[in-house]
Length: 428
Image (cartoon, rainbow, N blue to C red; front, side):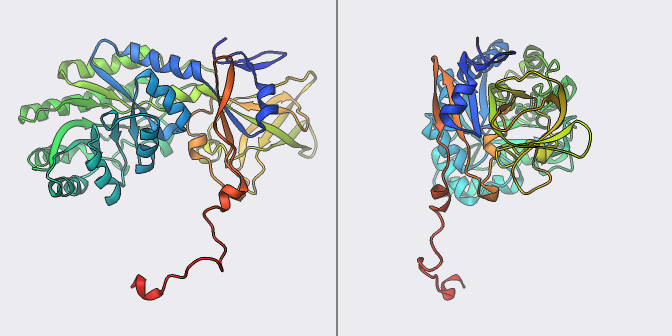
């Protein structure tokens, strides 16, 4: 069976027993289904097949190299948000023409490297950034491929922390200024304006913001055509949501048809930048129960596990919901459980008020739909080493990230008495 299965007797990923995997590799442990990654990529690619297009997977969702190698083999391009993400993509086999470079605060060094690499497009966030790219490119005697990111002032109807297309958000050029900025960019000797780009937010679960953003950007591309500016592509970003609670999700076919309805009349190639939708449902985070304690009277308990906000930040950061399932189910009456992490923070929560048979110390729980913004946001808070990550496929698994050690954490920290002191005069 492809993907994850939880029954009364066992929990598996692509037929591999999760309890066996947890015993072999320890916890916390991210477990990915290679089959699901490939199937979800192909489903979106097929849904867009009626129009020239390219899927640029958004690395910010999860940039583990082993997953990128799977997507590279499937035919994806990538959307990078930093020089580090570009470097990881290149290590995974992606060529410069496979990469679009997004990001609201690209450094001078990142822009110089991006221009030198001749990426498919640098998605510029402002007139100032276009000026910096132009100067870098002209100094090299080149023309950099750029697209202008537009802020269409559209509410994504999702959590405020992941909405990016409103007037008050830091992303892109305001739609009222965008035509002038694009005309000026097209006239610069160091720039080649190849597209327009918009991304209004993540975890969209209704079609209305998708339709409004796509229509706005397509209409804007038509205005540029009227100005004599010939574009190559229309980049409509990502943001397609998934179901975290098991309820029906927005159909990928409906999503694709909505984008194509806007893009087809322009005659431009369509670029999309999904992240969460491709990898979100393809992973679980396995975590071991380390303590169980009652909360006063009644049947409510704290279930303390070895994974928390340093492994999966979304519940603490966004009050996000993830389903939690036992890997080896127990029988008995259910209790109300607050599943919490081990860190010294009250916000270190995995899931509150979950009804389940009360786990025991040593039990392994699976946090579902953890493939996006899980390992990518992990930290070393409280000096927790980063968790291991396993990719299941071909009847077994392989680690795509070994478990970090404390020695790894200290490798960048020389003893205070062992390093060279930089004279203050050199810093003046």
